[in-house]
Length: 287
Length: 266
Image (cartoon, rainbow over all chains, first blue to last red; front, side):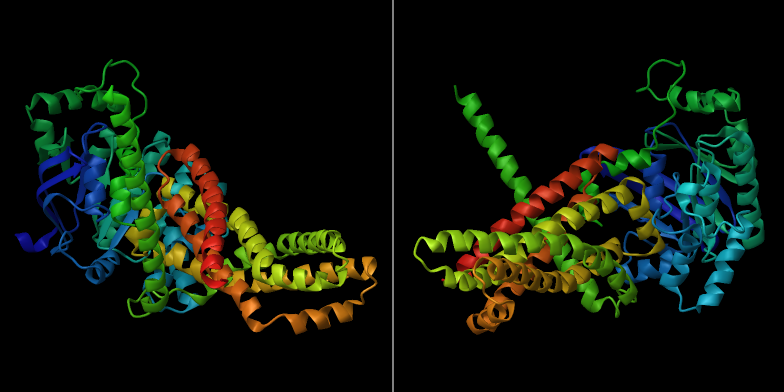
């Protein structure tokens, strides 16, 4: 049973300074599964993602990726493991000084000894997968929001990783583009048997792609189960989440947080991943 | 009664602690930068020559016009002032000594350092700071690229290569402009000016300036990079880091110059 777990987080506790962010979080995902992490702003989902990526050290607990506990790995082993991980950040995080093609080629150049031609062909293939063929020579600043996300996805999958992390694929995109990205995520799972972790606010998108949904609330796991089980849940907070129309999801997600006030038009949630960046302690500890 | 005193002491203490922490951060950055330059190859993360050359063009080659112009002005200024003040003693002929010594030992490395701090220190802080807030630094880390190895180490190497070269260029340009002025004012042929300059100067004078420029190279790189990595508050933070890295870079250079000169020239 544990053998085919691609992600196995157990008893994860994390702090920023003295503030506890995640409290005894347990999450599992099997190889080839799409796991969606949901929750309102401040629920800790972006913090969980950043820990899964090995960007911070937890206070306690273990995070096993592909059977290896990243909280205990040395730098060399982590370096090897990173070749099997792809990440598409919320804002894309494409390197602005490079063309789209160079961005996609970068992991290949750093991790492999392939010749120039092979690198070109491989990156072009990945750009084709995300429907951006022919955009290699453009700079990221010349792309639209949806294209940036797709280019970031191409960079994330260029090494054919076993694990793919996707932070807020639909944030800031119109429904059509966001639906296209959902299709793309499904294709990647089916074609390449990737384990995909998606952090999202969008209910509609979550139900469409998820094999398993993890709902975080105030740093704790509210539920981590299949879509069907989530729908059948009688947990009041989850029911209130489901009873809203998907369009209101963002507001709803904020509303069930005790710290946010009026249920009116809540501002678009600021990604916690950005907020977490503002803490200099975490930054200074690890470059 | 004690409250203002106590809070003052607390503020001083916190400030000192912050400064010590910052110095420690710079030092760690320096060690890590050199670590990747030397051992990167064995850690499967080599610092690429192409990256070093690219940075060298940015911080060195492109700085040539401005450094040359500034050095030209400095050389001429030294000649004017030298002749003016030495005339009091009727010793205008000694101006060559004054120009040669002060240019090679002091002005060339200092003016180069300050111009590079202004040009590149700010650019380094802005580039790394922007990458920090747009999650590009995180992206580097998850791709498995150490940000210090990828961003700081090539810069450090490029600075250490180009700063001495720029300093020697500045030496030559400043001496040349000094010679030009002397040729006009004292009817001293340029050839004779240089001949006497080379008689006066020993290798140690030039080396003194070059060694200083190496220290300035490290200071500019580290202050720029450290301020960039510590950006946290969006665009405003980038602006602040840029300003800070120029101010601290220039002050750092002048202070280091004073200490180095004190230790080596007495």
